[in-house]
Image (tube, rainbow, N blue to C red; front, side):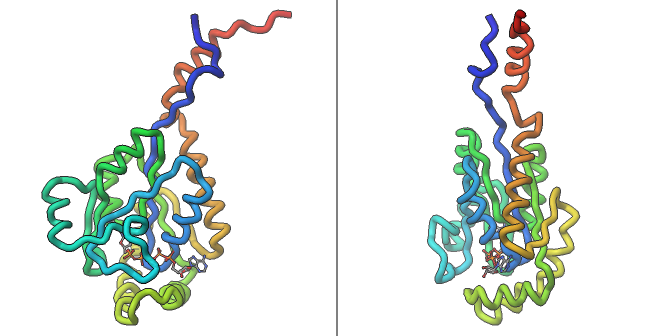
Length: 220
Ligand SMILES: Nc1nc2c(ncn2[C@@H]2O[C@H](COP(=O)(O)OP(=O)(O)O)[C@@H](O)[C@H]2O)c(=O)[nH]1
Ligand SMILES: Nc1ncnc2c1ncn2[C@@H]1O[C@H](COP(=O)(O)OP(=O)(O)O)[C@@H](O)[C@H]1O
């Protein structure tokens, strides 16, 4: 006896949503808003050797570790990907991501283009990638300065790399110019909603459709 469609659990294959951009374009702001607004989405918290900024919370924004500990993560193959960015080391711990996906959550990543390339080689079908552009380079610099979390020297270093970062935009599925943050949030929510509905991610569909087809047509 075929189950009625409404009693079939609607399962979905978890996806990994990657946001990349030059520093200051708005990934962190957008990620926080997205996590507030989208259920079933969990942030991947990276490890980094960078110094904690005054506004950052260890364990929420990053796990701040020293170089020896970072090297141990790499040696133990505990990172899904890792890269050196602006002179610091960053990496994505494997275990929390695997656990989140196994429990039916989607995972959000704020990683650079190098990390994205590594993830593409490992898990392309499960990835959705978005590159965020600033409305202008002048606005990017203004955002980095007004964020007021980095020294002038660090801001200059990030601006100097911005052109190189931007040159990777073609490697991403979606491109967003982050002019108005609310409009950007609407766009990213729309992308995530649509990607969740992709046929191949809805793993229980064959059972659901078989049950639909097994239902008797209503008699008149
Ligand atoms: N490959 C990789 N890049 C990361 C990771 N975590 C952060 N990043 C990137 O490192 C760069 C610098 O990040 P951060 O120091 O927080 O500066 P911010 O982007 O200006 O806030 C950004 O491009 C991040 O996307 C990671 O785990 N792996
Ligand atoms: N659409 C936007 N308009 C104006 N300011 C923004 C916008 N998005 C982000 N910001 C501001 O720009 C600065 C950098 O944003 P942040 O999210 O930290 O960037 P990233 O994580 O990409 O380095 C922050 O001060 C943030 O409040």
